[in-house]
Amino acid sequence: MPAEITPQHDDLFLPPKDFVPDPRPIILASSSPRRRKLLSQYGYRFEVIEPDPAAECGICSRETPPELVARLAFQKAADVIQKIDVDQRIVLACDTVAEYAGMVLGKPNNVDHAREMLLRLKGREHRVYSGLCLWSRASANRIIQVDCSTLVLKNFTDEQLDEYLATDLWVGKAGSLGFQDGPPWLTLLKGSPTNVVGLPMELLSQTLKNF
Image 1 (tube, rainbow, N blue to C red):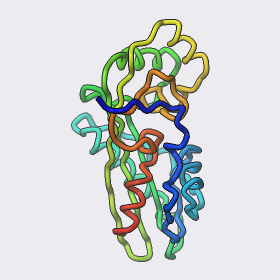
Image 2 (image 1 turned 60 degrees about the vertical axis):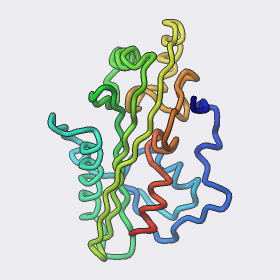
Image 3 (image 1 turned 90 degrees about the vertical axis):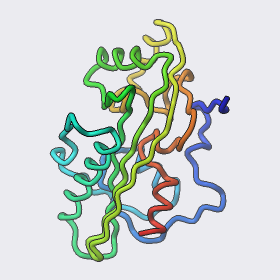
């Protein structure tokens, strides 16, 4: 059985002691405070240019979850790349969704929608996919990668669910769960914890090396 990892382990979201960030300046094409926090913690030089909301829309029924996050990350990067000058900055875009039994679980519309999602996941494994896009306007180089993490949502009582929903921590979270501040009954089985938060830092580091 894999070791249990719960959101209380804050060190999971910090870089290794010997980590050296890529020195090139990055433009983060995202409005997510969690992605900004991760980049700051890892010591990257970056600024934020948010993509237009239209760049984050569109679900095709024939797409798999990996295909969906890859396309949305590309759309965000493509929107922001047009807003900058030709220089050495690298545009970074990411999109994250939860998936259970082939069903994409995006951000909940309201508390009832969040409750429905969590009850569907109760006692079952699910996956979190993040699409990562790096794009340089100066070199026209572009890379798109996808990361996946597997989690399980243990059984919980109705009272525990009501307590969690009352915190509003589910707001804006794919699958209604934020691993960094979610309930203790959420356990990471395999994959990157930062991917679950919304930006796979290990994949980002490796992709930058190959960029």
